[in-house]
Length: 164
Image 1 (cartoon, one colour):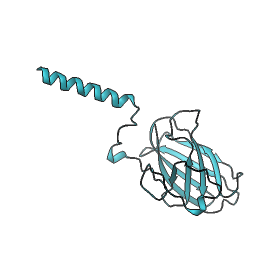
Image 2 (image 1 turned 90 degrees about the horizontal axis):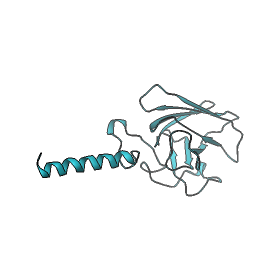
Image 3 (image 1 turned 90 degrees about the vertical axis):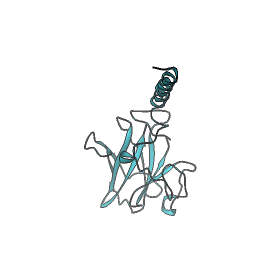
Image 4 (image 1 turned 60 degrees about the vertical axis):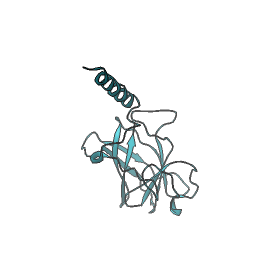
């Protein structure tokens, strides 16, 4: 191997090791498995104004993620969300829902995007206020894109969240 070839090979090793060491945070997800984290009113990963129904006593300055149907919105207290059982901060998400809860809990079912398992289920009682809110902690066992299905009574929405 010539000296320039050795240099290029060493550079590739160093760059690859650096990308792996950051847990993937610096790398874009592949297009076919990309997570569609939707910030309210804008593209993924940005902060934007939230709809009026999700702004009553809302925490300020936090990233938000909007459901595909626009009927649920989550304020992320941890940014980024982390796999496992992180603390300081935990993966707290304050959910606001557009339709009345009518006493129904928020049922969250999470799976890795495109997979059937593992499945994470969280049930959040309708006992918080004011408004149509559900405080939760959603922990997943592994990093990646997780598809969340949300339901409360006869209402439903879904979204994808990235966990590192």
